Image (tube, rainbow, N blue to C red; front, side, top):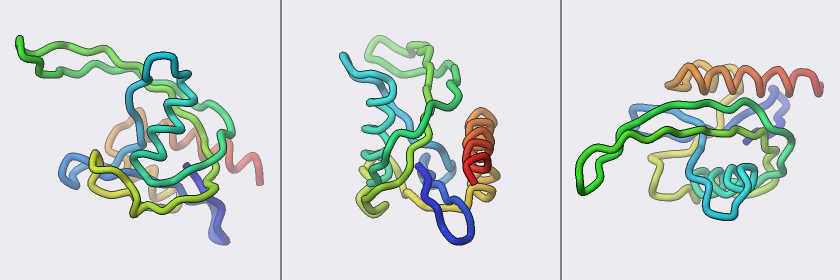
Length: 133
């Protein structure tokens, strides 16, 4: 999610893991939902913000371990990122899954992101926005 300001574009990041990580919003695609629909829903849930879909960005792939009743399960996940232009909403309306949702200048956001793969997505978003100016 981005918004234009006099100082340049700002993006909204979420803080997770007890304030230890800055990330891009993401989540699970529900049955019957397209990836873009899921992205818009997850962004609004995790940031309290709503926006218009501008374009698809990169997708990333990773594995993580989830603990089920029968023990640890290895999960393979694909995450599709989209560039959304802010239309309305307030970061104070973020859900309980995140610690905070905060606007940052795009360059600062890129350096704050905890994961290299998300930094790459942010660089791509910055390139798209720079080409629009």
